[in-house]
Image 1 (cartoon, one colour):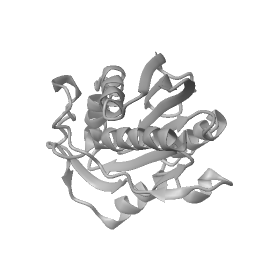
Image 2 (tube, helix red, strand yellow; image 1 turned 135 degrees about the vertical axis):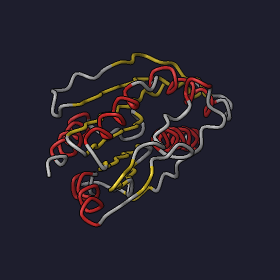
Image 3 (cartoon, helix red, strand yellow; image 1 turned 120 degrees about the vertical axis):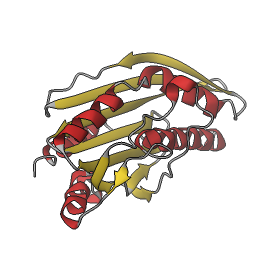
Length: 225
């Protein structure tokens, strides 16, 4: 069972990394960073002290390219837009669960709006299911079933906001293990921030929904300069 849980955690980590690449290579925005906007971007993302008690560890989830993704899951093209601040690390993990957050500052609000609209058009529902199926196909004896998916019930905290959640169930031999992948994306003025939580249920230790939503609220609030 420990080995099976390790395989599930590896698959989830790979999905988090692939999802982080949505705004990354090979269609990355132009970088014209300045110190003030870099500091702003770093303030937006989740910090270790935000997570509270627990064995939270730094997890550097390297972005992956989209070469094996279906055509409808290719990364949006941001190459005509300019980032003046960006923060993607550190990410954090705890007992087969992962927290990933990003903070970005764009050269103009117009570019921030354009970037958000391209992110909003990304087919999360189709592509997350495909990504999980592709990752788990590499491991024998594990099945994956989507229980539910769609927008999350969450208050509007920013002028531009997107939420998406996917609940799933994995079969590991005779055992059924539940889990969820939740995304919160916010955009205000020139800045945007996002939080993604990927977590397994028992016998792993899931990230509580209350903590997940607390982190989303913190990131949304930090968009205000």
